[in-house]
Each structure stands twice: as structure tokens, then as C-alpha cells.
Length: 477
Image (cartoon, rainbow, N blue to C red):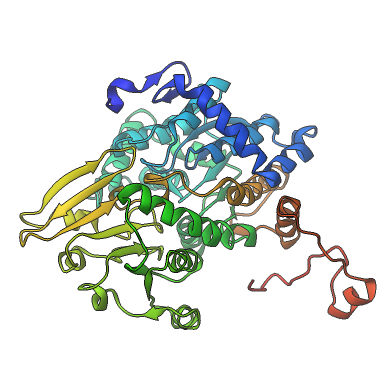
């Protein structure tokens, strides 16, 4: 069954199979029970409807957990349109359930890159031709499209530059087509956007770069660096979903294998711990001496990718950078090595360089449901690339578990309310510590936890309120 023959469109949705909606609804109901913070946030604000009539465009992995986020925003009054932020991350039954509810959704697992950007556009524009008031973004694609659109209108020469990737080729094509019809289309879209809430490290890097250059077109709230996102989604979520993705893809025993984890930030910490828990022999690579020392203190060997090429069985990239594993690296790996990414969406592994190797042979082992490809080099050795170098936990499995995503998405809802209720400047904001603590508090009962309480004397002694916040803004958990 191919995407072209099996995807179905009717009215304001485009999904693989609307017949999967009932299955999706059952899984959404299970997820709601495991997402206490998000459900509590829904109940707290349901009556007030703080998002009433506000147009919110979402560009975030269309999973079961995201479906609960979407329905929470809808319950708070938002007028929604949604697409995924990764060609492999959509769970088709989740998309079908949202479509059946009547919320415009444009996503299915296994989109082409051209289709992906067309779906971003469909989610961006309402039937009256206007754009969103607010954006929920994951990786900065929706935000980036608006900024590239405005740049192309102010400087037409920008659209004449040679595309550096398949994504840029698709984007430039869309922007050129729009420019033929309306030379101020994106400037009008940007002017109507009150703000964006951004989910990921990569997206925040992009926003901070725009802000520093004075080019940020609208306010942004940094959801990624709220503690209940970065220390929960990035650490505990990856600790759960990385081994899940590798095992579903390859059915491989990780115990005894040598695994190279590239990067020891929050994501890397979760990944290294996950592999250690599998009783793998873990090597960490790092450029940051502080993170490298942390890895040493956690009992991991710190080395370079080049040092492990002849011995490592599995490579996991999670740095948020580009070309961390190059085609040259893969050419030097041992036979049957497994290569995957759980960091930046598709730049950490040089897949384009790998495909360009003269004489390389590519064999598809598994299709879009769990993408696995075998690359055989001219010398006869092979490596396995999972999810085409995109996020292995979403491409080959179902991503982070419900409970962890409840923390992340509670922050997203609060950020959207903040954008709707305040006139913010064109800068990048952090979620206040008080709200961060409240998100954590909403999840404690599910864990059977009971908080101790400060006396007034104790609160005065450390200079905080009895009710918190309990740590200064710069505290590093």
C-alpha cells in the first residue's frame, strides 16, 4: 500500500486512512489517563476558554500524545490547524482521530519532502486566506518558513540562490509560487502572528540566532528549556524511546554491544543511561569539556568517533549539530554497524554524503512504517541506517511515553495562554519558574509522591516563599 493510493482527503483533512479513527480514539483515551498534568491543565482553564477564537497552527509530531495536546487546546477555545514536523513521525491512527473530530490535520507517516512542506502550508493558511495568530512549533520549521518567506519578499535575490538541500528546494518552489500571486503575502502573515512556543533545542537555537541578529519577526516562548521539558522529555523520554526504536528496527540484543553515543547533553545523558541499562559498553563523544567530565564521572569512556570505528556496533547521534557522523566515518565502520539519530531532525548524520558514495548499494529492509536501509560499500562491508537519519524513536517506534509528554505539553499549553494573554516583545522568553514547578506538581500524585512543606522559618532562612518558587531562575537542576 503506497501513500498515493491509500491517503484519503475530505474537506479539511488529509490523512492516510480515516478508518483508523476509532483505533486512534481508544489510544487517546489510554493516553489521557497517563497524562495527568495536561488533563489537569485542560480542566483548570476549560471554563475560562483563554484561547477562544485564537487561530493556532501546530507543526509538531502527530502522535497520540500530540492528539491529547490538540484536544486540550481545542477545549480551551482555540481554532486549530495542524501538520507533523517530521516525515516519519506521524501515527496514522492519531491523525485519523483528530480528523474525525473535525480539526484540520494534514499528516501521514512516510510523506515525501515535497508533501511535507505542502502540508505545512495547508496548516498555515485558513480558508479565508489568512494565517495563524499563534504557532506551536517543534524544530522551527513553521517559524522558519514564515521568516524565509518574508526574506524572499524583501530580497528577491534570496530565492534565486541554489538550494542546499531537498527541503530548501521544496521551500523555494513554494515561496516562488506564492510570490507570483502576492508579493507581500508573508509580510501580512508575519504581522498577524502574536507569538510562537518552541518545543526543541534546535528550534531554540534558530530563534536565538534570529533574535541576536534582530531578525525575529514575533515573540517566542522557549518551552524546551523549562525544567519539566528539558530534564524530563530530553532525559527520561529518550531513556525510554531510544532502545525502543533500535529494537523495533533491528531486533538486536544490545547487551554486550559497543555503543557510541555522540553528545552528552540532556538527550545524550538519557541515551547513555539507556544503553548502560541494557548492559551495553558505552562510549561517549563530546566537544564540551564540562559534559565530557560529567560523562567520565558517570562511568563512561569518552573518546572520538574515529577511535571507535573498528569496534563499535551501534552509533547514536544526539548533539543538535550537523554532520556529526560523516560518510567517511561510515565508510570506515565495522561490517553490519547500526547508525541512528535521536538529536537534530536530519542533519546529524551525513545521509546525502552517504548516498553520494561512488558504488554504494542501497537495500530497503523495512519501509516507511519502520524505515531501515542497508548501505553496502564497494569494499563489501555494510552499515544499517535507521529512519533515514531522522529521529529513530519516532521513525522506528512511537516516540516518548505519555507521562513524559504530559510534562512537555502542559508547558506548551501554558505558553500558548501566555502569548494570548500578554503583549510580548520580539524576543525569546523562558517559562516562569513558578509555572515550571506547577507543571511538576501536577504530576506528583500519579507517582505516589507526597511533598514536604516548608515552615515560615525555613522559607525565611533560604529567602523563598512557602509556596515557592524554590530555586532561583539560574539554578541548574
